[in-house]
Image (cartoon, rainbow, N blue to C red; front, top):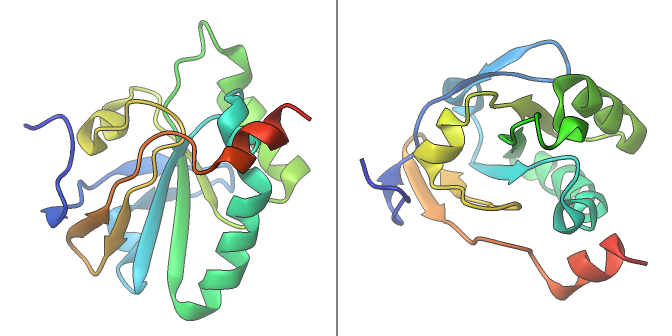
Length: 147
């Protein structure tokens, strides 16, 4: 298995518990025109600096058929703020308008080649990963994380 996805590769399936109490698989998003998969966490300053824009993106594009899932694959021994309990709290505080799921064993992050947060592959249709930018989304993420 390659460590990263190439454009056009089949999106790896997953089954992940989310903060809303549901378990999500790739098939749950099959009816979407596109799926934005964000590998994020609670403690990364670049993710924190992007959360408001992620929320706005999810709200703006949901009516166009674009779904979004944010997956926290961080280990919690060195990053206790990334625990599932803290994810639930963070999602409620920020009123996340997207699915926020946990990848405890990091298997989904490895399958998608997510090496850092945020990593944002976009899947269009049922199988293809079309876009895979890595790292912070823009200079604004850093500025927002460190006001």
